[in-house]
Image (tube, rainbow, N blue to C red; front, side):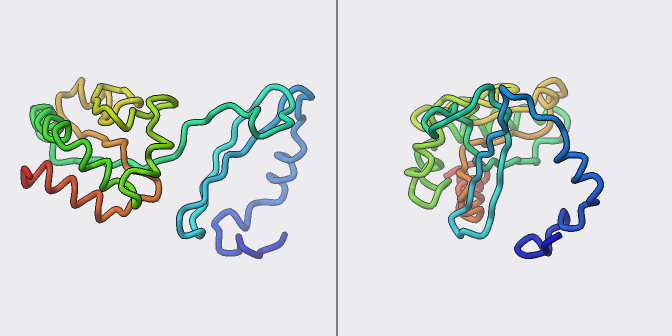
Length: 180
C-alpha cells in the first residue's frame, strides 16, 4: 500500500483484508457512489461526503444539490438549571445582530455564505434570522434534548466552513456577553 500523501493518516494502516472485503462488495448496476469533496481556502484541509445515487450521471449538472458543509458553534454557559432562559436571551441578542454576524462568519464578509445559506438543504436563509428546536434549517438550533431539559446549549449554524474562528468568537462575545 502506498504511503504518499496519506502516510500520516490514521487510516493509512487500514487492515488490507478489511479493505479488500469492502472493495469486493457488489455494486448494483443502477446505483453509483458520488463523492462531494470540499477543499478549504488554504488548499490543505479536505473533507468529503459520499452519497448513493440511482442511475448513471453523465454530466455534473445532473447531480442533485447537496447541503454544503459549513461550520457551527456551540455555546455552553447555559447548562445550569433553567439555562433555557439564557439560551433565549442569547437568541434575542443574536437576532438583533444578524447582519454583523453574517459578515463576521466568513472571510469575504458574507459573500461565501451567500452560496451556502440558501434556506434549502438544512441551511437558513442568509437574509433572515431564525431559531428553532431541532431545526437544522434555522440560523440558531436548540437541540431537542436541551429544550426538553430546559438547559444545555445553542448551535449557531451560520459560520462558513472557511470562517476565521477568532472572528466568529469575537462576534459571539461582543453580542452575547458584552451586549454590543
